[in-house]
Amino acid sequence: FFFVPFFWKTLHTMATVITLTALADNFMYLIIDQQTKKAAVVDPVEPQKLMAEAQRQGAQITTVLTTHSHYDHAGGNNAFKKLMPELTIYAGKGDNAEAAMVEVGDGDSVQVGVLEFQVLQTPCHTVGHVCYYLQTADAKCVFTGDTLFVAGVGNFFAGTPSMMHASLKKLAALPDDTLVYVGHEYSVSNLQYAAFLEPKNPHVAEKLAWAKDVCAKKQHTTPSSIGGEKLYNPFLRAVFGEPSVMQHCQTSDTVAALKFVREEKSAGAWKSHI
Image (cartoon, rainbow, N blue to C red):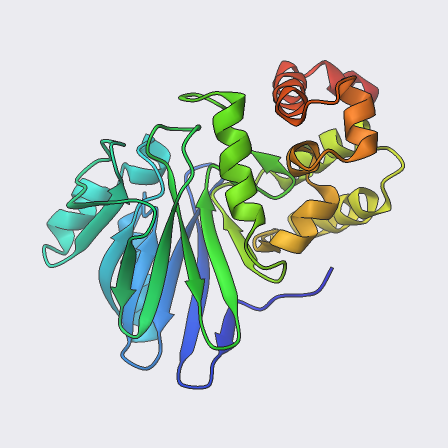
């Protein structure tokens, strides 16, 4: 698994992605266009942390990118707007996110300096969940909120297995070298379940050992990559009908397999086998 830094350089500019922690296990992101020093933030539930970091970086926050309406992601929007009235707050269509000013969906884009974020609708965890995809001259990244985690996916609170299946297929269609910036630090637990489901998968074993080491050092397991997730994420592997996953789920239907994996992971009985 290749090491990915928190910044990259393009032919015309440099975009910096800075990860900040919030609440118990949330991630927030500050994305800075180094050409203009304009910046976006993703899911700023603790806005003052992001404001302080932007000041340290000499950046001006102009944009809030909300992935979904749950409090631990959108719950800082009102406070942020009061602190910085000039902000524009984006959120998914129909998601009723706190303080949303512009609702976006498939085909929409958000401009921050010279950076352009493409909106991907990924409903299921919430009805209007969206992800934000950024492609520069030589790098790609996607901010996935609670749709896709490292080796996991969000609960199907507002949708069906078919909806999550479609959302995951959409994300999996991004280039394999796309960096995946997730909404929570759930990686060790997710990979422990993946190891239960596919005990002979060497990619799972390697990633789990890595994640345990990273977390023990109080570091972050975000970002991963789309290509990596295809190797060790049991939910994506169900969507793509990986034989070992399908055998575990005792079905040939990939939607049924996704439903099985989600229910088994949530039930937790597997934990007694690790």
